[in-house]
Image 1: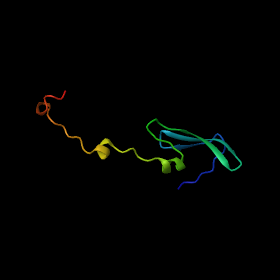
Image 2: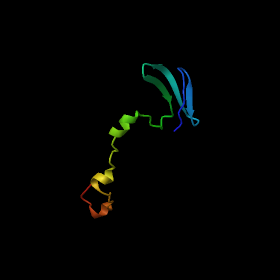
Image 3: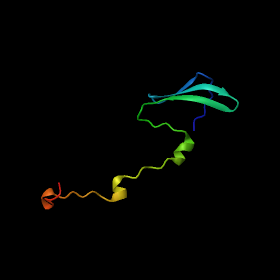
Image 4: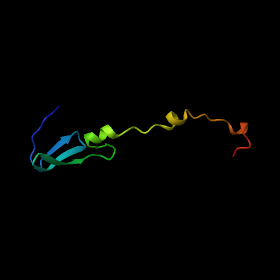
Length: 76
């Protein structure tokens, strides 16, 4: 783990696309801003524990089976 000391308005860059900026510090808290591309999910750590993956359709209903329509002509 990299540990850094930053003051208000100073930044940390992660790769080419992510910027973490210290907005405000005081009384045991730090307010930060994070700029990241839309495809990068940014969440507080405690929320990651609550997030459950959404099951896929096949895990709920089983695999999809395609049947040729000529076997069931009465179904449109």
